[in-house]
Image 1 (cartoon, rainbow, N blue to C red):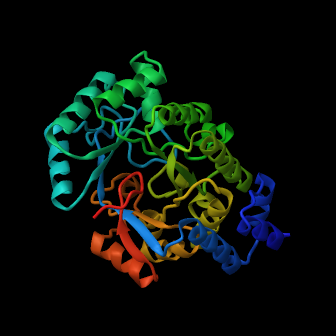
Image 2 (cartoon, rainbow, N blue to C red):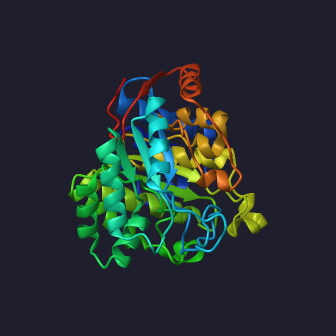
Amino acid sequence: MTNKILEKALNGERISPEEAVRLFETTDMLLLGNIASRISRKKLKERVVTYIVDRNINYTNICITDCAFCAFYRKEDDEEAYVHPFETIAGKIEETIALGGRQILLQGGHNINLKIDYFEDLFRRIKERFDIHLHALSPPEIVHTAKISKLTIVDTLNRLNDAGLDSIPGGGAEILVDRVRQKISPHKCSTREWLDVMDCAHGMNIPTTATMMFGHVETVEDRVEHLRRIRDQQDKTMGFTAFIPWPFQPGRTELGLDHDISSQVTGLDYLKTLAISRIFLDNFDNLQSSWVTQGPKVGQMALYYGANDMGSTMLEENVVRAAGTVHCLNEEDIRRIITDSGFKPQRRNMRYERVN
């Protein structure tokens, strides 16, 4: 049965959610990786693996959502809580540009003191001072900002876009099944709200990415339902530029105190999920390797399990690091890993256009 499903996918036929669940039952990792890799190469035609030089900047770590999987957030009265002043953010952008960066990923917590005018002012000041792509604010942050500013999602996106927002990261998706979300992030936006932000953004020609954080309380069926929801959205708008799946990092988190959860995801589980994502998401060109969570060796293996992109150089990353997972690669390291894997390294921008 598995071979028939894989043959169907290799021939360009769409597989069903039920068939995707069946693929999770296979133990033939070499066959699964081979098919995912062949689909990737057939879609992209060249042995090129892309990457981007950018930096994750967290404008605040203050958050009211209390997500059980997060080790990064702080309460407003915590001594480690912060809202970075503009000059601190500007200094980080200057460093990024000096190292060849073309983009910043700007994200933070759900801070009830930061309404729409804060972001409008911040984005305008950034754009006035720097020639930089602003990849900012995940859907939950946008939903939160809309609610505390008493605005609709459309009005919020319009104002952010006018102020300088260029694209939206796909964070905060976790698993797009509300039963799961109620267990791990009950105060964050719903599945429908996450998808509505993306739908509105795509309608305004604001490109976004899609993500999945797996390996906690979800089932295999939940993972596939998540993939189905983003595949359906992509059918509708074609506004996602890439899909990035990564495993839950349990260190220092409330959710990670459960031993069964902390030991759930292996490198093979990650590679299997990545490969099935490539096979199922037939309307996505780009899948990203999560070397930040898996380390460079498994990240390199991902290039043979459906990934065609090594993601970011991560000149700065704080959220995964807060959970105790620390992997660092510079641009030279990423290019070497790609070359050693038999591919040509190529810089890109957020739209996956090639740049020098």
